[in-house]
Length: 189
Image 1 (spheres, rainbow, N blue to C red):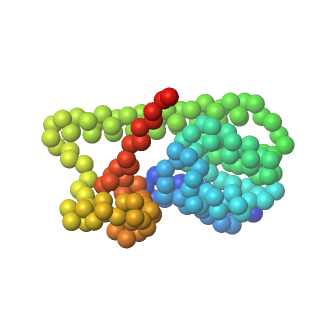
Image 2: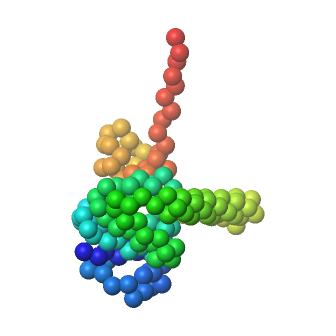
Image 3: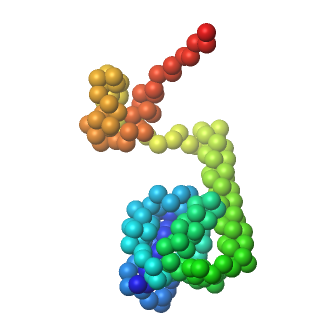
């Protein structure tokens, strides 16, 4: 079978420029960061591919923005007997055929993609810090009212954070924002 894998970083973006006129039997589209391989559609794709299948990807940075993950993923696909084609870079990785030049090019482009992602994150952090200093950035408004925050804090210890999050319709991570974990002091003997 022939699979097309498309990825954009946010739900607001679209994949219309990726793999235009590239036919396939099935398409997988993720709207998630490429910082790691924990993406639902990528996982489905990896579960479905078999020996002899082909995966089309618009470009290396659509597959991963992390060199280590990219190399591991490509090695796993090679072991499964899957061919992977990166159309923008015109790179094809075929099982049982070692091409050191292709691997080197993939590694270099993967490193540049990872660098680009890190630079974007750094610029965002710098911009937020400048906006905070200027009083223009206050951060996201609380989802919970003051009364709800007090209620949440009173539930800590009585319920686990997953139950609390579900009760308020927030993430578990948000419970730590409203009620940070108590610091445990380690006393050395």
